[in-house]
Amino acid sequence: MTLKKYKEITVPENLEGERLDVAAAVLFPTFSRNRLQQWIEQGALRFENKIMRSRDKVFAGGEITLEERLDEEIRWYPQPMDLDILAEDNSIIIVNKPAGMVVHPAAGHKEGTLVNALLHHSPELGKIPRAGIVHRLDQDTTGLLVVAKSLEAHHSLVTQIQKKEIDRRYSAVCVGVMTGGGTINRPIGRHAANRKKMAVVTEKGKTAITHYRIARKFKHFTQINVQLETGRTHQIRVHMEYLRHPLVGDKMYGGRNKFISGTSKNLIRQISLFNRQALHAKSLSFRHPDNAQIVQFEAPLPSDLSNLLTLLEKEDLDISNLDVY
Image (cartoon, rainbow, N blue to C red; front, side):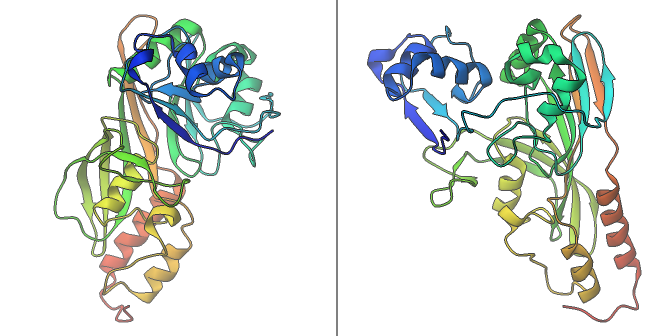
């Protein structure tokens, strides 16, 4: 059976202080408690958007979220694939994810995912919740992910994420010329009409905070450095759309390619070939689970993003191009 529903339920007062699995069994009576416990372990069923244990307590007014779930028949299995591993020890793996790779198996992506590759590389990850992955990147976003290789490491990293102690920084290219950096503090929730999308939602949205600084201005585009304070789904993409500076190549949040007046037809043609959002997770910093020492990792820009920046630079220097949009 395939679940394709997304549910959010507020914990009522009579469930104050109950275990998460007990509260979930009351609020989602169509599912067995065992199945709900499995989803909690996998991170599909969360409280206040946090990965928790079945025995953790909930409070009244908090929200239990059941994500759009995958086919129940999907089995996570090892699959030999190339992985760009930047660092590895007994507790963690640092992976540089390429564009096009889905992180977790799902309906429509039962194989070829990062999880499949990781299970082949380190079979012991099959005993860790969500194969040790404690944060995600969208399919077409490139860059760094940390993977826990033990339950102790998993607990440490999840705790650091919940306490906002993991520093995640990104590089992105936006449409239009931004005047300066800043902070976007706007809540994010499911889009009212399109459940596959997220949006800035005032009433039921979750707190979402994005810090951004200008790295480089081009004539019609801007490269920015982004630091996440929270980690909502599609957060950077949604917040940039909110500022009316969507990411280059973002079909979901940028709509059809939008260009400002003066953009050359040649540049429009070239950018139309960039078929993913221009977003790269470039650095990751956290306390190592073994010794609590700060460790930092960096991943260079992928070739397609570097080529895009070179294209924008060349366009700005080409003063002879008068064929404009």
